[in-house]
Amino acid sequence: MVIHNKEISDKLNEVADLLDIKGENQFRVRAYRNAVRTISGLSGSITEMAEEGKDISSLPGIGSSMAEKIDEILKTGELKQLKNLKKELPDSLIEIMKLEQMGPQRTKILHDKLNINTIDDLKKAAEDGEIEELEGFGRKTTKNILREIEEYSKKGGLQRIKISEAEKQIKPMIEYLKGKMDNVTIAGSYRRQKETVGDIDILATGKNPDKAMKDFTEYEEVDRVLSKGETKSSIKLRTGLQVDLRLVKKRSFGAALLYFTGSKAHSIALRKTGQNKGYKVNEYGVFKGKKRLASKTEKAMYEALDLTYIEPELRESRGEIEASRNNELPALITLEDIKGDLHTHTNFTDGNYSPEEMIEAAQERGYKYYAITDHSKKVAMARGLDEKRLGKQIERIDALNDKIKNIKILKGIEVDILEDGTLDLSNDILKELDIVVCSVHYNRNLSKKKQTKRILKAMDNPYFNILAHPTGRLIGERRGYDVDMEKIMKEAKDKGCFLEINSFPDRLDLNDANARFAKETGLKLSISTDAHSKGHLEYIKYGVAQARRGWLEKDDVLNTHSWKELKKLLTR
DNA sequence: GCCGTTTTCGGCCCGACTGTTTTCAGTCG
Image 1 (cartoon, rainbow, N blue to C red):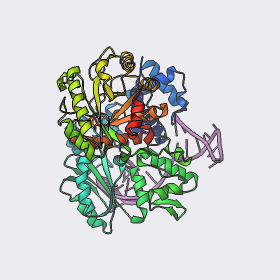
Image 2 (image 1 turned 90 degrees about the vertical axis):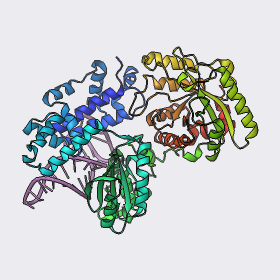
Image 3 (image 1 turned 180 degrees about the vertical axis):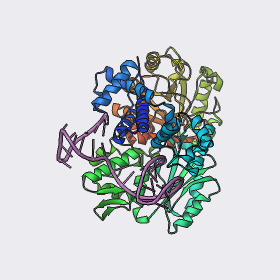
Image 4 (image 1 turned 45 degrees about the vertical axis):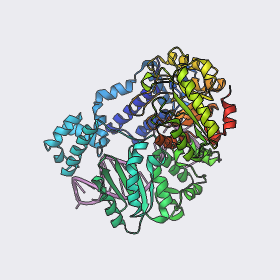
């Protein structure tokens, strides 16, 4: 039986939630959450680790006891401890606990005193006035609970939004705030460029807190004010996005930015590092007794802890603090390192613009080369190209290359990998191309074994260059197909093939963990947009961000190289 | 439940805000 990492982390997370509600020791609860975080950050499969006889308890935050539980899940698909917990407490309490304003303890009290087990129970008890009678609760709390239930049912559950969507929603507000206060900076998971964000944390400095908080809470898109204080206020935009503003003193800006950028795990690790040195680390600085050692900038904060500066994208407690201490942090790739796009479409298939128009947009970005990779015939919906139409496109690009001098246009294709692992176009035409991007669009539901075999077989075709959107996932909508990604990466390296980080905001595929594994395998990746429109070329920044989160350096990425070098790399 | 440049036992990050209180618990990040 193949157990996915997510099944393991979901079960352990449920255990943590239920133990939390039960009122168990907080550190024990945290231990489960730490294990969940470790598992979520793995690129490889735990099932396979176990099969290969690797020691699961060597993973950070996973000790012998946790390893035994994981082993039980691997062997039986279940966890007795979780089953027993569910006998004590209905797991529907977890849903209640995750409502805003509700935590483990309130959930427990409501369960014990009013026998509330579901969100419906909660709603009824709140409406009947039972909750406000309880000690520690009151009228306002009851009102907040009812509002959160309404919000919850409106959204159909609790959701995070894509980073691209968050960017769209927050940009106008940032512009507005910049006119009202100083040093306006977005912190939180947005600054770390996580693929999705739950809310937006903004940091700023200003001389007049009352005025600043008033300006913030009176922004025209604000739906309601959740809290308003001297240093912290929270609002909800009409779109449903929560935004927190923290006002800090200029001299503690670095300390505050560091703290509010997180991640939580990174902050905790930093505080521990400080503690070991006899310092106290908080959002106001690094302190030795009363003496402030650092606070103005993040760099100074890190240095006070004997660490080199750590880029926000790395702050996930995935080894960055050790690497910083040993001065072994990667020099992360930047947007400026990208020399061209290797996966784009035109109106030959389902793109919105002609090759000429797309190329012009690429020139505006300063690209040195630009690959046109329209769909192949299998993708009929997009009017995919057959050999004949691709031949015409090749002629058109040859003519363009004769005419246009400052950018090299690469003749390419996004060719479908058919179910049997062959490619959708003949080698006679593929050999005419500069670059062959290959992807799976159909037969997504093959078994892991078959899907892996299919892709590996496709890689045996000597013209196969890059596997596009390798897992096929769509964030928040569709799981990736079942595939042995580690095996594919290792074989890609051996065969001289590459994988893509697809920068399209819905995809971000490969993700950060996969990218990091690729680096560790020594496999270079491309970062491309899959642009279907001129404006999509800008999405490259999201791909670069995920690459940075995956610890990638300039040299780890195919399209940071000159066309001359790239051509060599593509030649098998 | 994890973990060790002080430890195999005894620690485990820290502060702001709200609401319900009248000194503080719960939640959040």
